[in-house]
Amino acid sequence: SGDELNISDIAKKIDSNIKIVTTGDVLPLIKQCKVLIMVGLSTTIIESQLLQKPVIFIEIMDYGLGIPQVLKNNSCIVSSIDSLQENLIKLNSDNEFRRSVINNGNNFVKKYVSNINFASEKVLEHLTKN
Image (cartoon, rainbow, N blue to C red; front, side):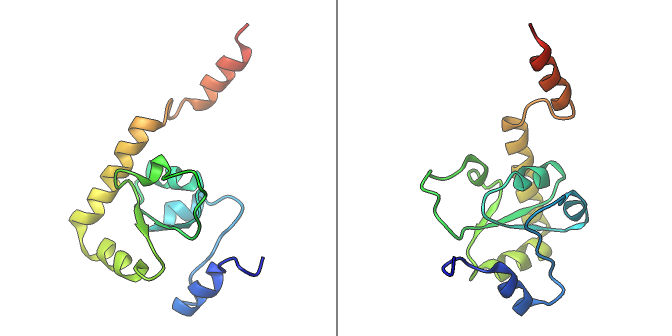
């Protein structure tokens, strides 16, 4: 709709080389990035945390479900568009802060993600049981 925020337009104003991906396999991009910037909720946040990448989440809408667990406990930086530049600079210039965000992401993953590296086997085991 016309009321939706077009993040591509904002990104191009900042730097025409910024790549915006909304669908498809983002794993190669996550592996290459220094920081993942997410607009909207997605499992990509957890994928990035599994790969030791700090995540900046830009809240553009309220889903009416309260604060998602992945955004609690400082496992991501929750940012506005206005504070994005400040957060990026801090992540790139303050190694202690960067490590803290990554460690908080690691702690989230350890607490909430089960069967890391064995999930497919566990799903198959569950499906073939009885």
